[in-house]
Every structure is written in C-alpha cells, then in structure tokens.
Image: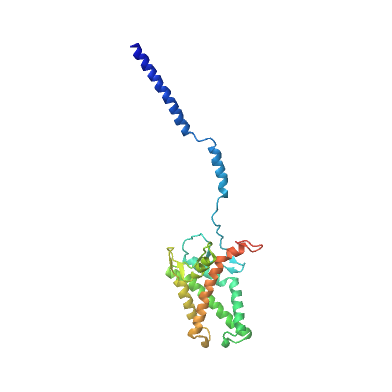
Length: 254
C-alpha cells in the first residue's frame, strides 16, 4: 500500500511539472512581441508620408475677378437641388452683374465696328441699337436656361466641376454639359433646358432684330454661337482653378 501511495504521489508531481511549462508557453504567446509598440509608433509616424488623394480645388465665385461663376459647383460637392428661388437668384446675378454690362458693351462695339447688322446703322445710335438687343439676348436666355425651364423640367443647370483626370477627359466632360445635366434626383438627363431655352431665346429675338436678319441661316448661326459659348464657358470653369493655382500673386479662391 505504501508503495502504491508513493507511486501515486510521484505521478501527480510529474503531471503538475508537465502542466507548468505549457501554461508558461501559452502565457508567452499571448504577450505582444517585444518592440511591437515601437513598431506601431513607427508605422504611425510614417502614415503622413503615404500617398494622399488628389486635392480638389474649389470653384471661385468670380473668374479673373470679373466673370461671374455662380453656376459652378466645386468638384466633390453634392448640394441639394436648387429651389426656384435659388435658380432665379443665379439667373439674376448672371444677367445684372456689372460684368454683364461690360461684356455686352464689348460685343456690341465689335458688332457695330464690323457692321454685323447694317440696318442698325453706325456711330453712337448704331452702338445703342446693338447694345440693348445684345443685353436682351443675354438676359432672356439666362432666365430661360437657368430659371424658367429648369424649374418646370426639374433640371439642375449648375455646372458640376470634375476637378481631376486628364485634360482631354475633363474638357470633353465640361463641353458636353450643354447636352447632359442632372435632374432633381441626381440622375444625368438630356439638357432640355439648355437646348430648348437657347432656341426659344433666338425665336424671341426675331421680334426685335431687323427683318433682313430673320432668315433661318441667321437664327441658326446665333443659336449655334449661344450653345457653343456655353460649352466654352463650362470648359473655362473646369480648368480655371488649376490655372489660377499657377498664376503669380493669385489664390485659387480669388
């Protein structure tokens, strides 16, 4: 009996000694390896050096300090659809901004100098004939394209800048916005407000331009000019923040 008791005690002692190294090994595996905290700190210090996403430049309210840019939406921004009041405000800003009077004055001076409409005459009287007609062209076009038709058709006529990508890709995108625009649900759709709005504006102009300039060819030429001007303006809006960032003594937000 004593022999059996001694043997049992020896076996128990052996099992305890075998369990202790195993527990120690398990505890050691649960501990983080030495220097892990310093490795994490080092990784955290290296994080700022990782590649950063392309910085999207905001659209300014004016281009060159003169041209109004209220229709532009900065790249990456998704504002809610404009209310009729907001659309009316943008159309008014574009129509009666001081730069509009300057722009119409320049185009009227060029038209008078080239005798674009001989029936309007030359000199101060002729210049005034060009001026008020040009201003009316610009104003009724703005209210039709930016406010009236978008409100009825639920289209967003603001220009959403792309802000990144190749020059060709961005240029094609900007120019194509005269044909494509988002609706109030954020889905791209045919830009009926632009295409039909400019057409209605040209049809209205028939009532106040000389009869000799009411031919289909003359109206089509003016219509193409108006749509092409909007496409060119969108392209200029798209690239202006990048251009301004490289101009001396200028800030992209100016």
